[in-house]
Length: 224
Image (cartoon, rainbow, N blue to C red; front, side, top):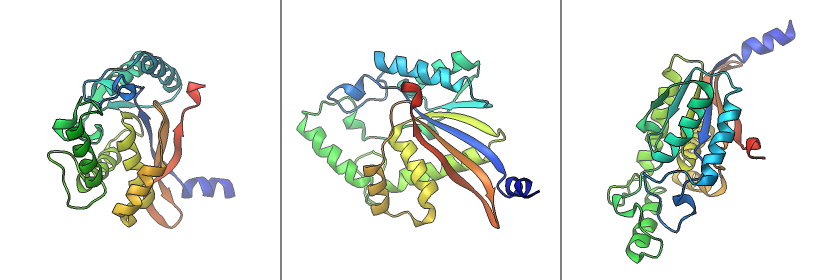
């Protein structure tokens, strides 16, 4: 009787498996990563590892960022599970200023723009050219959580990007108490391995409203 009551008071309504893509060629090149960078040989291997692991998970929908590196990772999962990929712009990586994509780290102008853009990610109201900023990325993370909450499926796999996935986790953990400084510290101190698996659950609690809860963070046991 007691155990049944505990289960009913903590009913799991939805489980979300958040996956970072495999290593891309631009991840290991001295350039500001572009949107079209494909997976490296290591990244392709990592994608197969996570695909094998996900094939043992029961889920109803596979959603991916449309960028090249996430698309290739999701395609490995699709082959392994038979699930059709649904692409969503909601789950792209933090959006750099256009003038940064593919530029080498040695480009002084690009480096200056990068520093300005990095600052804008932790400074309310600030924007660097056409790059995403603090207000925009937090709003997108909130929209992504609302989108997932409203989906009819009870279990979904999402293939996305490290910084944006960490932003979603920061929103779950800090909620309305998030500030630009706490967000900066979270992004600085958190990390996410390529193809790391993070699990969120939307569930009821004891005498409280349903809410998102972090269940697992950056599990990369499949990489050995």
